[in-house]
Length: 265
Image 1 (cartoon, rainbow, N blue to C red):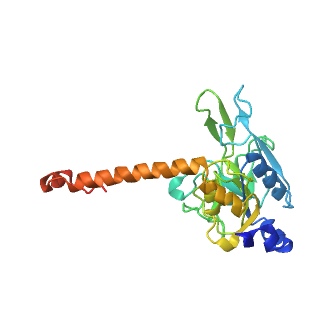
Image 2: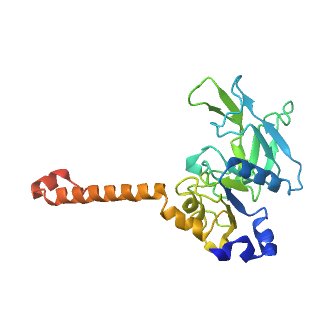
Image 3: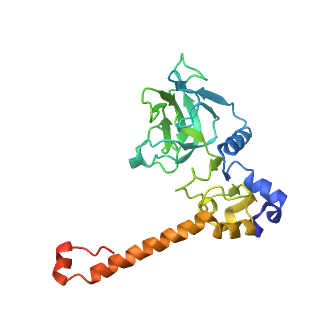
């Protein structure tokens, strides 16, 4: 693990690989993630556009919504979908892509909502939406509405995209990151499973760098933490229930097993 720290990798190689636009960083807080995303966006030379969400009166800056209050994008920017669009075509929450263009109505220019943001999504399996060679994976992502769970009268309209250079650890769940991955974690395990979730996003350990917050001493403390002890006790309870179920099944007469139809374990 020490071999993947910033110091062990070397400053020149670290900057070249992990401060590049191809790398993904994982953070513990949204503030760190947003700061990194905007810093990486600034490296692109194309013009920046801002799209302001259209909110219902009284909505405010709600953190309960996946749609962003203000969305900053450039052509060439790395993005992720923040909502499911077409699961059959593999356009799901978390799908990664790259911005290739914007569509505007004549009387609605930034920061007003666009007609759509056009992105290239390598995982897209639906029919082509644009003509021309090399555009088979281009998708027009239009603004959509999202309503508050506790107050359906309040809603936000925004393009369901977010910058994809930095993610929170929990947002990255279910993702497999094939390129360079840099992990920046706090000095303590704020939530159970944080380190495991971050480390398991990478396909290859050689692609991972540790920017801070991870040490052998910290990993040892996880094993003795209250949360880990509770998890171990819960696993023991589940194992005992499994054994009891197996014993019950083994003691059933054959005719009862035929009636049940399947082995429950």
